[in-house]
Length: 213
Image 1 (cartoon, rainbow, N blue to C red):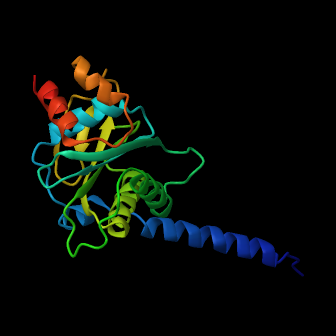
Image 2 (tube, rainbow, N blue to C red):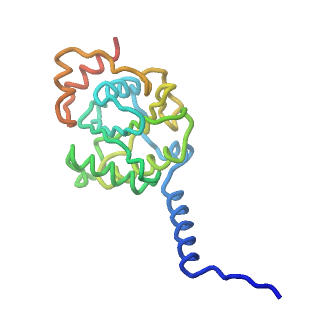
Image 3 (tube, rainbow, N blue to C red):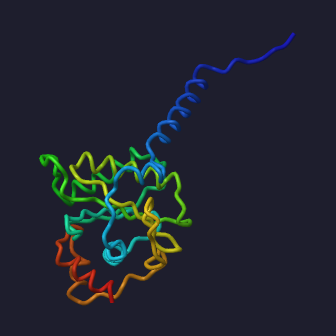
């Protein structure tokens, strides 16, 4: 005769919940091939955009910088925030965090038939330039946040020890990196760096000139 114990209903329910949650998180991420085929607009000057955002926000690992660009790729608004370590890599959580920042710094464009502004995301993290599931969750979150705010979904850029990388495009560079010191800025531009996260195109043009030197 064999004796055994059937799993309790509570244990079975908890296991099913964990399994379902894992499946849902996997569904809320995008792989590089999916991202590349989604028609994400290419940045005309990715190095200038990355250098400008790095100088302005000085991100450290686990910091996300979301920026809104106009049709001429000039910065309209930007915000940076730290990812909470207690939050799992879930596209839904990242979407909500990005959307909250966008709503704080710029009005939505939902009344327009087609988006005229583009949101890009720069994420500073540990590790190398290879895609991770965390990157996939940020991609999903950015795309969904853009839809809900009436913006066009733009590039997703990682900043690591090895430099910066535009995922899905194969473009990148060694500088800036997560270890880089911000570029030296003129005094007039420094005033903009201490201002609120929302900024106009003039400051970005100055940042571009500085980054190009």
